[in-house]
Length: 87
Image (cartoon, rainbow, N blue to C red; front, side, top):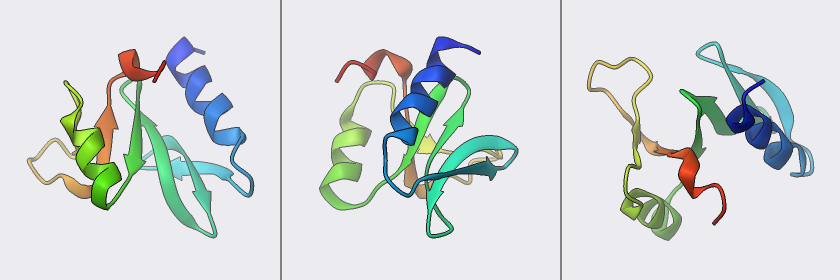
């Protein structure tokens, strides 16, 4: 398992009530059947709103999550590069 995916699992498992599953064939965690984080292309992808969304999008290299790669991003989901893992 890559260090990026290991970090994803370690961080997500620390969240009480988080349950592991899959989204678009990729690892994700959910609470009450609602996904809040997934792992895609060695990066973490978070479902965010408001100020948290704005701050995440301001990070260099962050982008809206577009798993289809057809320019149809999921507007609340932000894909954040691994090099921000120490923040």
